[in-house]
Length: 158
Image 1: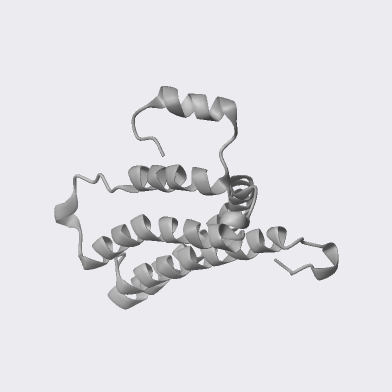
Image 2: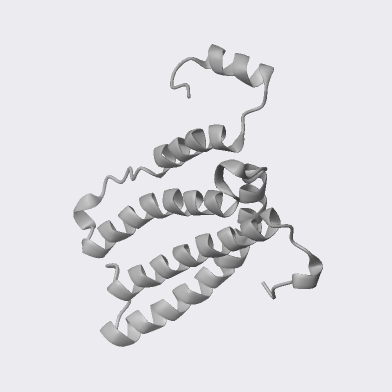
């Protein structure tokens, strides 16, 4: 793995394509780099906001490793193609789900506090956790389905 020498990496890429297991560390490190929280308003955070920040950092990394393992790990193939294409479709589905859940949580927040509280509540963090875990679980399910030779005879409703 290269951290600074782009010329050597380009030589290797020119000679042969990288395997999924060779690309995975680059992918994980990119995810870590772009998911580092860069907020300048930490003083307004409550404990649930910090919890959400940690989840937003850890779950994509752990979920990606889980999906990689569901793709047969080192013995798998086409991981990134499966991850991004299936991930896109699932992202759209989960975005709709997240909108519905968010509206429901706004109603709960309103009825509990008689106003729309701007501070993150425990039930919002747990719902966010559930959605993220559900996303990566389903992504792993679909990647495994493809890796194991998906057939229309065994269609799952999802």
